[in-house]
Amino acid sequence: MSAELTNLFQNGDLVKAIWETVYMTFGSTIIAYLLGLPLGILLYVTDKKGICPCSPINTVLGFFVNLVRSIPFMILIVAIFPVAKLIVGTTVGNGPMMVILIIGATPYVARMVESSVREVNSGIIESAQSMGASTWQIIIKVIIPEAKPALITGSVISLVTILGYTAMASTIGGGGLGAIAYNEGFLRFKDDVVWMCVLFIVVIVQLIQTIGNFIAKKTDKRIKN
Amino acid sequence: MIEIVSLNKTFKSNKEDFVALEDINLTVNDGEIFGVIGLSGAGKSTLIRCINLLERPDSGKVVIDGQDLTLLNKKELNAFRKNLSMIFQGFNLFEQRTALQNVCFPLELTNVPKEERTKIALELLEQMGIQDKANSYPSQLSGGQKQRVAIARALASNPKYLLCDEATSALDPEATESILSIIKEINQKQKITVIVITHELSVIAKICDRVAVIHNGKVCECNTPTQIFKNPQTEPTKKLIASATFLRGNNKCRLNLLIFFKTVI
Image 1 (cartoon, chains in turn orange, green):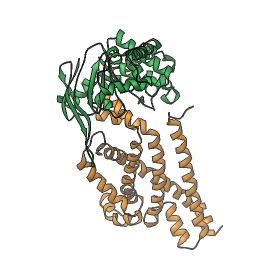
Image 2: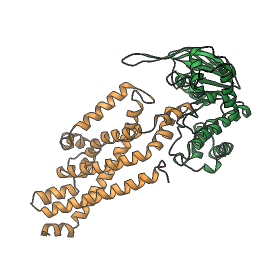
Image 3: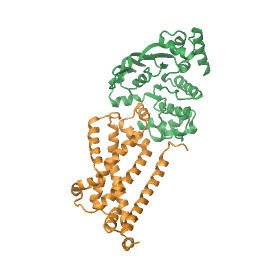
């Protein structure tokens, strides 16, 4: 173990970095879901085969989602730095990074939500329609509850992807394990620092995946007991 | 009373248009079980889906109790549909809800208080003979049990009409029997008018008061089951009955088939 790594452990920088990675990942995922969940459902219901077809809304939303999704995240970070500065007032630290993460993650989440709700059997939606449910009632009482297991599985995938985004973003501006790995490890030729950061990221991903799978399985009533 | 007046429906696709229903005229009287029979692709499912406007007809009227449904706006239609329940071949139960919560669903839509809707739902499950399955999820139920839950759910809004879209086609003979006797019973006791879509002659023979034979999107015959079996007028009807008897039988033979179907129940 190199002196730098020992030092990072002792002065608490590593623990702080883990914490920063976790809260930036979860924080931006939560906000991305607050925006992306309605967006994804809107994409689904306004589709020409959806329950409330509206081609103009669908086309415009779809265009913006595809636009952001098509830009590699590393380039997106640099490209939307000015936007983040406009919102937070500064380009350094975790604040602007969160803004960038949210902008990058929301379209991803929207597509994830859209594909999850698409899995709901159309016959089930039809039966709700035949009972006289309004579009809003179908969304709230049928589509979201019926897609819940898929939505949870999707949010786990989103979390892991956004964790990757967070690590990328932190090499440029914010804090977190990515910053330590790059600044303290890679730039100073300390491989053990890099590997220690990788180890922690792997552990975080495994925890997210395991807990997420457990919750998804618990909530799904389709599996025979 | 349900009146279908010169109803047309064409499915448009890029290659060619498919005429699903052509100039359909039918009247379903209150209190009867009305059957619609035909081969796959004849248009019978489209027809029943036009009655509650899950499928919007291109032209023609669907008049129920004097109200033309095609003239209603979305909100009025949703309110009207509570009078017009439907059950399906694939049951279409909410998979993340228990049997009880499934039956509560139509009552939730009209904001019936929770205690009251639970009470109504439990009564309906009891009527269907599956009160012990109230807290089971659909994945834990057999096909027959699922259809019973679906019927209970359809009855929850206290409808005047029940539409059955191939409701017994996915069930084994035993479950089919029990579902058919339930349908017959609710028709007689609760005076619910029933429309049954099927490709099985036995269903027609067992429970229907009148039956329409539909072929290539047109109604080719409409009569009582006895007349249809005894004295089929058109070629598609004759074929349909012949296919069930396996022989191009005479009148007596067909009548025996009807008696056979009726006594099985």
